[in-house]
Length: 406
Image 1 (tube, rainbow, N blue to C red):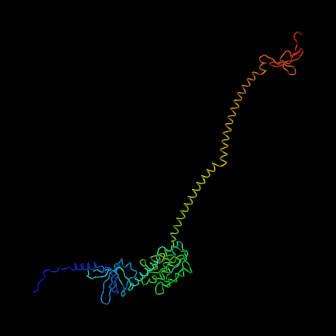
Image 2 (tube, rainbow, N blue to C red):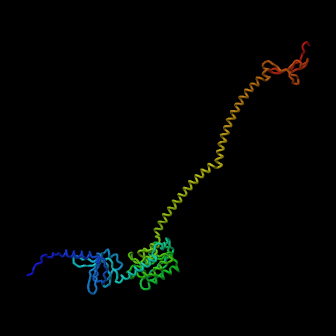
Image 3 (cartoon, helix red, strand yellow):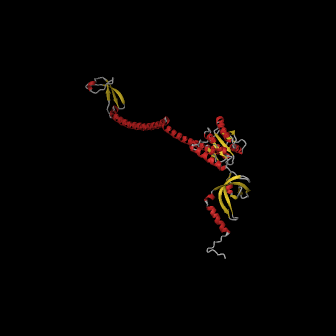
């Protein structure tokens, strides 16, 4: 007879057990940040944009899921049969009870070593000061010649040319063609940059290519390319890959653009913006000139007033007015003086008239004088038979002297 255990084990529901296992997986840090390598099979990407596939090797298989928001950030998406490395976290899909990997990064197998080499070279060049901000050269605002280093057959060149023609048609564009992928690409990029600097001497150089995997972009993670960029006479703008792609060339360049098109935009002014800027500048100049003219007109008016106040004409007019006033006062003064003198003269005339011989004669007196005009003041001055002139108030007459007793 079988004996029942004293403490019976609890009975789990499928849901509870599945959630318990899921919590165990999600609480394990190692399983939440891991890279897994394998071969892709049963790849599916429905209209939702999510990515579903199985990652397998010789002995096992692992279901993988990548949500749409992570898918659209990838520069590389696998196909069935590709050997890949996928980064993500492990959990359980409760509906089926399967454990699966939820990925956020996919790269071709072997890129892990390439990335380690990328980090090693970046640290080395950074320690040498190749990426320091103070050595970055400014990008000219109005370039006359732009050099372009890229593949002559790639889409990047077409994007760059279309953008420059649209934004700034007057600029001269010189292409220095090179391979941008493969074993000879690094040497080609170096030679193309040096050729532009030595033969063309452009104002700025655009180094560009389209997107690709880390392996595709390895020519731009080359040490010699980095040194060539840093020693370039013309400043260099890189537009390599997609917005999320970073290369050693980007760090060494004077300016990084997220795409070839953006690099062309950063290298050129926009003619529409230029027209608007010229319009604003023209309006500013008009306002400045108008303000200057108004200011000068005000100054001129002030100087005219100043000169008028101090000019000989103004002084002459003032002196003429003063002369008129003085002449008027002199006339008044002369009139008063003449009237006063006339009054005084009238008084003197009256006094003279009162004292004149005629007045005496008018009072009954007469003047007796000899023929020669000598006045007779005494009887001793005359003798008998002298003819004398006698003047009275209303005339004169002659008399003959007769001595008394004769």
